[in-house]
Structures are given as C-alpha cells and as structure tokens.
Length: 313
Ligand SMILES: C[S@@+](CC[C@H](N)C(=O)[O-])C[C@H]1O[C@@H](n2cnc3c(N)ncnc32)[C@H](O)[C@@H]1O
Image (cartoon, rainbow, N blue to C red; front, side, top):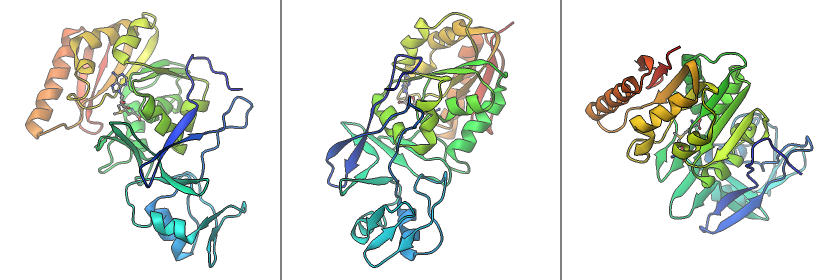
C-alpha cells in the first residue's frame, strides 16, 4: 500500500478514447519501492518513426529510448510487447496529443468533463492544455527548460522549504527540489490536472518524491492553513488573470507574505496575456500590489516572463 506524508494521494488517471468515451486506468502504485507503471505512450511523431521502421523511439515522451522491430503485423519491443499496424494507423497524423493502448482500445491522455484537459507533446516535457489554453511556455523554450530558468532566477537556498501555489504538471515544484530544496508544498485546484499528470512520465516525482507534498485545493484558501514564516521561497505560477483573478490580488500577496520567512524570495509568472499593452498593464499592476503588500527587490525579467520579489528581513 502507498503511504505519503501529506494526506493526498492520486490513484487513477483517465484516458479519453478516440470515440470520446471516458475510461479509467488504474495505475500501479509505489510505496513498496516498485514505482508506478505508466503504459507506453504514443504520439504522431512516435508513430511516424515506428512506421519508418528505423532507429529507436521514445515511449515515455522523450525521457528514454527503446529499440523496436517493425514486422508485417505491427511493432515488437524488446520486452515482447507489441502494437498492431491498425492501431498505429489510428494514431498516425493526430498531432498535439498523447495516446496509450489499454485492453486493445486506444485512449488519449485527456479528460473531458465540461472542461477539456489534455497532455500535449513538445520538444521537451509535455505541456497541459486546459480548454485550449497551454499551461506552459512552449514558444522558443520547453516547459522543463522554462521551469529551471524560473527557479534559478529565484535562487533556491540549499535545504530550503518552498511553496508552489499552482502544481500543474509539477515542473516548478520538481525543479525546486532539483535546485536543492528540502521540501515543497504544492497546491492544485483541479484533480483532473493531477490525473493527467499521473500519466505524464515527466511528472513522476510529483507522486514518488517524498519531499514533495501535494495538496488538492484552492491556493487562495490553502495558504491560510500553512504555518507563518515557514517557507524560504514561493513559486506563484497561476493561470492567466481572466481564469484566476483572486491569485493576482493584493489579498493573496499578503497571504504569501505571511507564510514566507523574513528575507524569503518569490517568483510570480505574469506572462504576456492579451495585447502587448494589456500585458504591460498586468505586470505593472502585479508589481504595484506586491509593493503595496510590503515586498521589496521587485523586478520583472523578460527572460522568465515574470516578477521576482523578496519579503523584507
Ligand atoms: C500555469 S499552470 C502551473 C504550471 C506549473 N507551474 C508546472 O510546472 O507545471 C496553473 C495551474 O494552476 C491551477 N490552478 C488554477 N487556479 C488555482 C487555484 N486557485 N489554486 C491552486 N491551483 C490553481 C490550474 O489548474 C493549473 O494546473
């Protein structure tokens, strides 16, 4: 049985079949050191390579590569698993999506429940689209490279404790651990996002790294339950302001300030929403409210499209 330090655990991931049926996939879990088993994942690009029959392919969205043999009926992998040509042809040409096969049915890593959550391959780590809006920068960078840059800009103290207000696929939280944090608390509003993350090999650490404590809830309220002066840094990477206005409010900035240690650092993604003019206004508003909230060392970086700040010592 799996046990974790924080009272939250994701057990299932959902796949959307090509016929738009919802199907639930139960992943095998950790706790006994065996790790979770995410099925082989296929994209249009993987299928192109498989049908060409040359070289090796990645079945985990680029983290590793495997050899294969293309036969008359399909492709065989070194562990003996196979995928038929008919299945490959169904995925062929379906760009911008990730698929897996379960019980002979091709499913997309996506959830449709009134909103549409979908894993989208990139040149690096995949991104998540919610109702067609990408949750990471993918132009001129990759989601994983972008996460690393943000964390470097904050400057993570070795052994520090971090708050990541918006988990998403967990790249910020996991980068913070890679940069030397000892503990990260990460909050996500939507369980659907975590269920998609569970199918993403790049998000594995979210569910397996015991330094990472996932909380399902609205960051606006969850932060109130966290101890005062506890965190050395906060990563605030909310969706665009039209989708999460309260996370851009002076109120919320005061909540972040309360849980930071004196001298604690922060990063607030502001991005380039809407027109250039509106983007600048948003950024100015964020910086003004941070200043009014008593933060210092407030500066915008074009490179990471966001604002870094500190709580006074
Ligand atoms: C831009 S993404 C975060 C990406 C993340 N930094 C990563 O590395 O993958 C924003 C996330 O915030 C979540 N979210 C939206 N409103 C929230 C709230 N009030 N509290 C916590 N999470 C929220 C969204 O569901 C989405 O997954």
